[in-house]
Length: 152
Image (cartoon, rainbow, N blue to C red; front, side):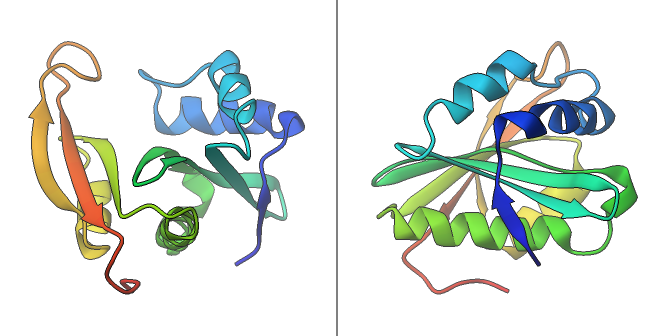
């Protein structure tokens, strides 16, 4: 898998994926601009491209010893091929490289596929945030230690 750093010119493609994957909670272009302004100090954002252009991206906030998965999305055309897993592996490696000992993320409580992916990567349930994504849309807070070896 080949990824490259996300750049400002990727934001339009990333926003299109955001609206496809997260129609009710999509980030704005301004949010991505704000995140990219902190690269490389305490952010890491990469994109993956296929023959049609950007088809996936992932973002990390890292301020050792803690880190957070800021975002991850795979365009519908590329889902089901293990791309999300590979992006998460890269993100976990980057967090370790930055000296982080654990990582957190929030995921929609109804997002069964994502919850299964994160569980298979060693994330464990920590808490539930009511209405995090809007009325009636809770989030699960998941945590993973980064001290252990990479999970396949």
